[in-house]
Image (cartoon, rainbow, N blue to C red; front, side):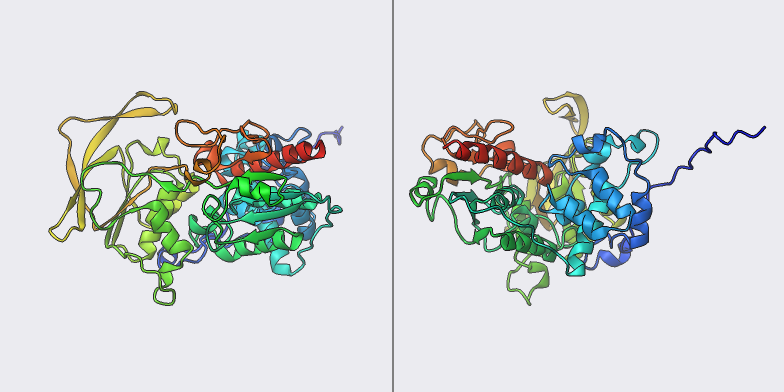
Length: 471
């Protein structure tokens, strides 16, 4: 007798790839590499989600996005509704869908990933946000009644934009003070066009201004006015989100040769100041033929891939550990390899070489081997005696990290910093040693991810609201 109660096993559906530009084509342009899901691909990928009762993906999201909720709406073809669900907790979904390391956060905890591939949360987030923006149906949610209290946010990067959006929606008068001439922080000066189109950042910023957030650009707090002067002008609380954009060099011989750049300068010239479109934009940038980039993070990948698009014949990553320890996203390393980037791993520069005119001509490097783990948990690179060799280069980009900008701490009496110059702030609230002053993002943690900075902004918004509700 046939048993109709036995359900057939559901076939596993593989994760849907996102269409991309061909590597041989994209290496000659600054257009975005992935072209995005079609409606059909997005629905098919969304239907892979099994709608867990206890979704680990939400716990892995620093801004608490209702991931099963927005994915279920996509599966039903309700794309605009999915975007609105995202925006309940994430004011920058089109950005996060592109640059957040989902593989280490939400997707890492997807139950499907235990025996196969996780649901493509980031790709679906990007799809929903892009669909809403391209439809012309972006809606502005209602704001709470003005409560008469003013908030100053210093820095218009991911953390500053997030806290501004959260606080303006619940009735605060919020002004962001941005040192550069465009809002966006690292989103506009650090991340290349081919990974995050600037028009998308502008659209996200425009959404916040329509919510009621005021943005003052070319406003360097600590120079134009101090934190204490902001309080004197009537602001009730200040949130410091100035990032960690001061460059770090290696302090090795030859560092003053021409042709050696910090990644900050190299990328800012290209991204924010449109140097890659010279002479349409009058910002010059070196177009080296043999470019070496020192470092193994996302910024290093952005720099080396930018160099190829600027016409480099060879573009090489020099990294002192192996690919396993490399902090860059797997996707970014994969794209770099596809585009022809060369990798010199277990290699560390010890000296820059130059010519009589003072221009860099190469790097004297040393082979490394991995020893015992260091404080980061990664194996410490140890020099191999007698292994020096030279890598020819006419341009070098140094991407070995950044440090805190000292301007705000130096002009804010009583603001505690640690030995590296980062602002000391309480976990979960962002409260600093100064009453009414909060901080979050890279100026507290050191260089980290966009989504972690946004998470700090959300937490500080709740803490500031609680603080001001009691006063």
